[in-house]
Length: 420
Image: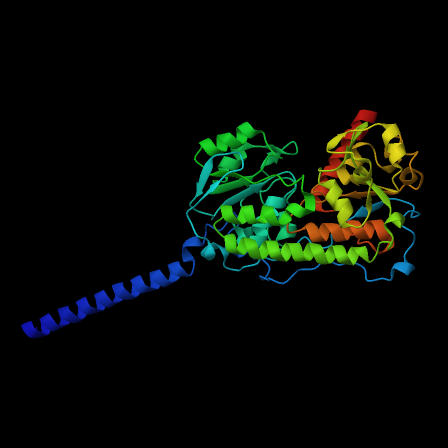
């Protein structure tokens, strides 16, 4: 081959190699910018197994019966128990591109004091007693980045079609630190309703940023917006937090208006309502500042605790309950099961001597939902309000939510063992 022909061939080959390298580099940059670096690290299930619902900024309103108040019975004279079930567990995110909108790293002050720096959000663990933090994570658009769950979170409801996430609590709300470490989370979002605190510190000492979100119980429904904003700040998406908080508050406000149409116009005609926490042979009255007061007020019922000045959460006696004379008693589903059901609950001191006891007017709702304040608050209020004012129109699924159904079976087995 002539020398000039060889030199030309070498130049062409070198040019093609350079072009391929340049093209490959450009392709890699484009793929990176479009999120290819997150494939395989979205969560423990993988991207293909988890597809969030389409994003929406407009309110996702729950179903509240559209019926004339005059067609409904007097809520103080309704008889029989009712279980309040939410109709939709799905939480549409406010963005389909949350991971790419995050401004990371971000440094925030955890509610327990220390500053924490979040560098990645590929693998998120959100855990608290009522599942509200995980609900906020899903609503912000990071649902498929969650790698584990607390007992109150049913991931298959929040993100329909997804596989269930590993449970990282044992015995109810006790953190299993080894189970958490095995999931290799990039960040942990939690609060003081779950523990023990030593376990949370152990995870932080292992190098994982552990961020405590302000506990929401005292403000109840009113805390939904602030809690969402805190979660969003910790994930580097404050703007999305504002959008989700705005949508959630609008959903709550519109739902409260819809429920108010079911309630009697005159406050004096509305049902006197108390929230009791049942466990075994005792019960606690949830009063002002417990969060239960905001639930009762949000469904346009008379909050007896506020009327008599009962504050906080503490055991009560039969005399106080009889004097309160509630028309409706709200309880948690598992708490009701723990005392043996409706008939056994009526045998607790003072309950049968109240108007609610005489009419067996006990409304129960999932322990994992009723005090969960956040993106699902509107759904919870809709279910509770309908159960109180229009029980015949309330939603009744074929089976309770999986997490509740499983725990109910366990409680019933425990009671049977005690009787045997």
